[in-house]
Image (cartoon, rainbow, N blue to C red; front, side):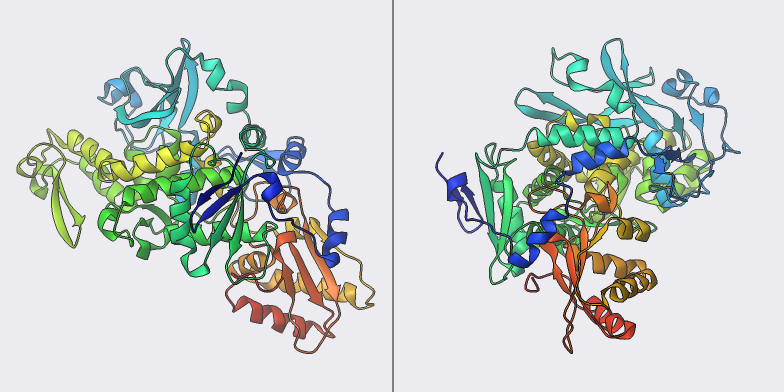
Length: 580
């Protein structure tokens, strides 16, 4: 197969055309210390680990953890039943009358992180009469539910539609006509804990990657243009290159991509995706600092053209990150992850998106005298450089909201806030994800599991870091003291500075799903964090070999000099590839 060239962005090579990649002599010993395994192997070992189940979000945590890895709640934290809610059987909705097993909870005592984590168990997929269906188990507010139903054909994603839950309390997940549910949905895996699901997803994804010997891509970019060129490259991918292995080269920077340049490329692109000045996303919930699609992106997108194409590129970026095993600082609002999976949504999800708006809509449902508020079936939002009144229904601005129609008003507001105002952007993002990933791969996950698969963990477990670190031999008698000083200094760092040190050392600001034992090198093999003491020269700083997750520490004569050196590094931009 001949090479395919995307001018100025990507080159696709056959194996015999790819430049050779050698390991520097001083790093040869690193490989001998590694286990020769990939993340899937590490994930298998976690299946046997002893765990405890969080009572709030039902996440299985390692026994060594004193708080839940997902909701951050201490052990034995439970939620309480609502004190104000009517019995579910008294709710007017046909769907709720037919589903009295649904429980109503008062979640007002939960913070945003806890609420998002608990909501992962609100809906589960079940097979009912040979069909794959959604079932709801609890609610926060009595309101009808809808889903972004994805309809797939043999050629991929065919259509996306906002569909109401039917009166039976179930929602069919629509797939290709004639396909047996057993061929698209693994019930055993779906009902298992996350370690089992994660391993299954990793194995499914690995099977779709184009063999390196058949085709691989070389991304050539300039640091000042990484984001724009990445968006162009992602849109240029076709069916032959969408799942090919990528290597990155940044003009004018010394490092060869043995993994760290790719990690840094992913991090820079992710940060720019969420940069509000680029116009694609904006902070929607300031309590947990999560981002949602900018409804005004057609005007705000900084390149001023094809904003839906930009969202399709973002979707492909998400798919590629999962394919490549990258963990990213993409602080998306849970609504986006639920939309990708097609999880049904309702007024409950407005609380995740905009807590103040949720309280306002909840107030309307619980109180009479709505007529006095002067509301109409319309909203005023920024469009372009000005504000525009948008009807929620035909001539909505002329229809007053009353006690008699307030339920419909709330339903239309929920649709508008979650989907209607961002329909084109959301559809493009979802299509982009499934341009890369098989539509069945993510079916076994809930929205928090998808988030953790993509984003890993932001908090650093120092014990995990230290226990999964290799210290290379040194001839210096002071080496052991320097290593001890290093960990003492890391222990004293703020969470933010620990993350910066991690990024300086490995090229990534996030910890893999498997913890520090899941760090990898360019070839996908596990490459533990490594420390080596080297000769000290006055004014010397620690040196990072990010491609191999290694940090060289000069044998400083005292702890203060090491502390000062690390402090100076943390004041610098951790990006760039000129140190090693």
